[in-house]
Image 1: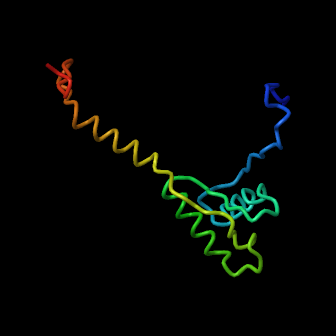
Image 2: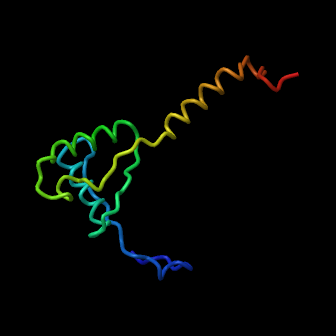
Image 3: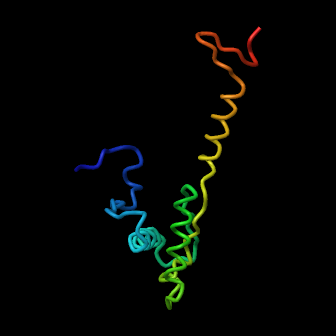
Amino acid sequence: MAHIQHPHSKEKSGVVDVLHKCETKTTDMIDIMRDMISYLGDSSNRLLSMGDLLTKERQDGSKRHVICSNTTSGRLDHLEPCVADWHCLLNLLMVCDMYMYIKQGNIIIGCDSK
């Protein structure tokens, strides 16, 4: 498959591989996390891994699984699992929509009704 040419084509640093791994398996999650860290190279930077709460729990569990490793990359120290709050925000907006607008047939009764 050819690369689509665009103004930033020359800035392309590399190809990101698609990993055929299952997030629900600890060994696969460790492989996914190690692949993410491989993009950092030898830097001491930290990498935030954003996902929902279940993804964060799985990553935390995987980090606990390799905590006795001899190296920082083996312990996945440079990876910081974080919860992306956009799931919570979406839920909040859905609840607000439910309570602000009461739908009765074809008529919507809400804050902006006269």
